[in-house]
Image (cartoon, rainbow, N blue to C red):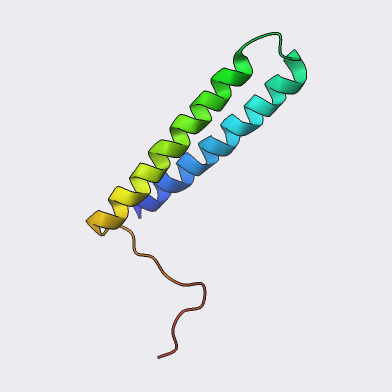
Length: 72
């Protein structure tokens, strides 16, 4: 359950970084490098989330499932 919470938190951080990048792009009109900073943070968070998902699957902490569970 802890790993699922960490995954959700990382997803929320990715979305927050994307929103902050969009806000700084609109507000600053490319006068500062804040947009690049926020988007770099988003990419780093996305890559770390992807690696965490792979490691979690290989260690057996999370299991994939289909959208429709099989009938007993």
